Amino acid sequence: MSIYIYILAMAVTTYLIRVLPLTVFRKPIRSRFLKSFLHYVPYACLTAMTFPAILTSTQSVLSGVAALIAAVILAFRGKSLLVVSVASCCAVFVTEQLLKFIL
Image (tube, rainbow, N blue to C red; front, side, top):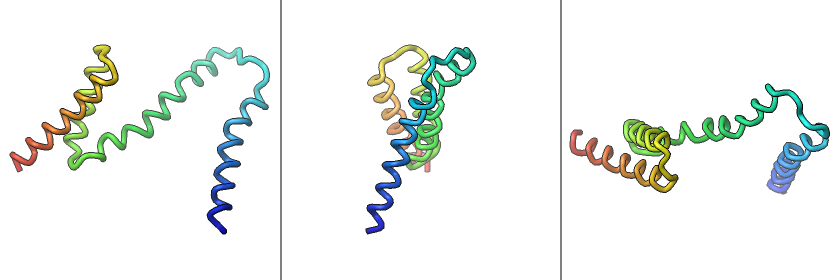
């Protein structure tokens, strides 16, 4: 029975987070600072959730760092998401194989 209370609490919390800004802010936002701040919030949240997982999802932190470096370089060069992700996976694979060979 308590699982249903938890699910209900999560549903209400999620609903309030999405509906409350729509009901509170009815007028257009005129502040340039607030607009620019709100523009970058999704990117900052995604980075905060993704960055630790990049470093800790592999067997070694070094392979995570290698994948991160490969992804950043290719992303700055304007490569597609598919190319960036495949190159990052290859960087992890090669780094893990080198670490097995060295250690």
